[in-house]
Length: 544
Image 1 (cartoon, rainbow, N blue to C red):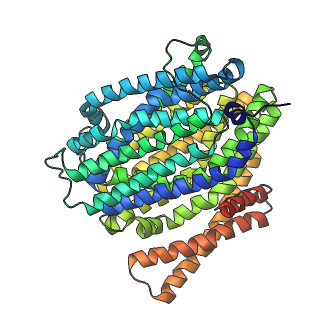
Image 2 (cartoon, rainbow, N blue to C red):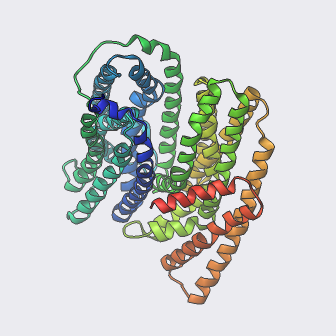
Image 3 (tube, rainbow, N blue to C red):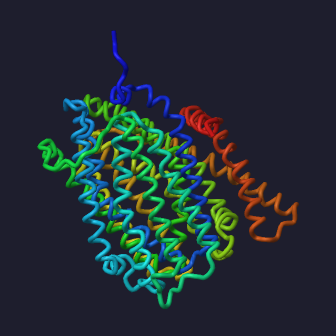
């Protein structure tokens, strides 16, 4: 005779993962869509000039500092230890989770206070003396958004703890609430009279406070909504101090992951400093990156999530053949699923920018800047996905050193390219140069990773992968060539002349015709992986 199931026992039951999978897929799509909507409102309301550039530079600070303080450690040490403690400790890992939260709050709190005290120095580090920089405005925004460091860290940590307890739905939906708060903030900002003064900057201006504090509030909501879910699992928090001896086992791994994060931090500093030399360049780069991440976030991340457990098991069992097979499949699936979207953004990038981002204060120039940057850098989408997959193979092999070295190579190449484009690009074209530099660095990372894995694992079926990539390129080129011709013909027949309606018409035709035709041609070319890729897309569409 069994008694009633406790909350902790329920949290360990596997079916919750299957039940939550549909909600997670929908949440990912809604999160991307609501995030895009918030960015669209932002560029429509405040434009794509110096004000938005200053806001973008400031809001980068809490995310990067959180990564340095907690992000790398959370990935490499905290979560593996949490899973281990749940299995080994008599209390199911609750005391370790309490200690983890205590340490995180302490570390993040101290880090936040130091960051606030050093806000002008952080601004100088990120924007320097760039031509279009507004350091006083960046600093003012920084004072308002830097407290978000604590909430970014807690959101990630509490979400990870909930995941170990098989609670997946709410952590996936929490970012949507963040986006909703930002959308409401922007609506209030638009209704409040006045404007933000840039010379001089006045800290007490209502619009400055609304935009900065509203952004920070969104992250606070994202973290705080997870607290009731923690309580429902039976978790009871208490402050717990001391040191867990098991952490020493992960010290070497943590060092390399933290170095990896640090290299990314340096890369972001250089990118921001370079982009601030062209008006609207940082905003245009961030927005084109947001658009480019939509197909990867919906399709690429789900592929990575599905393959990672298989690759980890194969690595643990020293089954090199299976590991290579999973890597090869992941590379081919990345090309098949993402190449048509890369082609869409290449041929319709300017149309996307004009149709979506040229409204309100942004104007046609701002939309074209975003669209041009997107069109010229979209080739990096597939190499980006493949590079991340390659790095996960090294992590599956319990090797954190090699990904850091590859990251170092990518960052060195990226910094060199950024300064090269700064030297040769006129200020109004710098957004495209920064975006191209980022994509080229991923191409280099993809090639270096493939060569390194070839040395480490032996033959990687690279020829088969290259052939699949070529077929996907040819199919996408034909598909979007036809779609673009039809779009131009329809624009001519309708007699459209205004830029925004013309761009919207071209975008709709190129999307509706180009994507199905590209996938259809790959099926006609008998690419074996097309059917599972199409099944994945169809399932995601039906879940909407």
